[in-house]
Length: 147
Image (cartoon, rainbow, N blue to C red):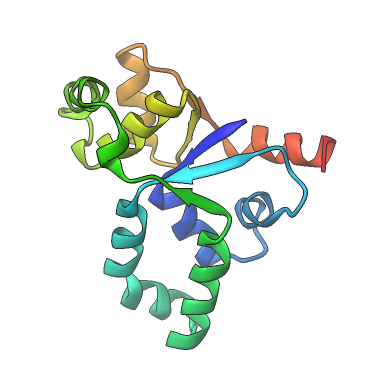
């Protein structure tokens, strides 16, 4: 299964390395394929100080955790997403959260599911009949069933 990972998922994994989210991402033998865009790296970098303050990580430890988690994610350059798909997703997300447009467009492009903890985004897109989401509990059940 192709899963597009939103920034808040990686943020959660960094904050709690023993969480279900971390276990899902770091599961070595899984049929889940994780994807994202460079926006994820940018957003995590812009919240470095907050992550360090919340976790107590040193800069070195945080870099190691980011590297470990992002090594499981395939990063796709947004220029590879067809313009029509990207434009449609801009229209879809503009009044919900345009910052998540890249993740929605990548989900459409790879015909995957979006893994996000952003309740506002999920509710807003569901109202527009876009329901290509997967949640943490469902993913956790999948990896426990088929490790």
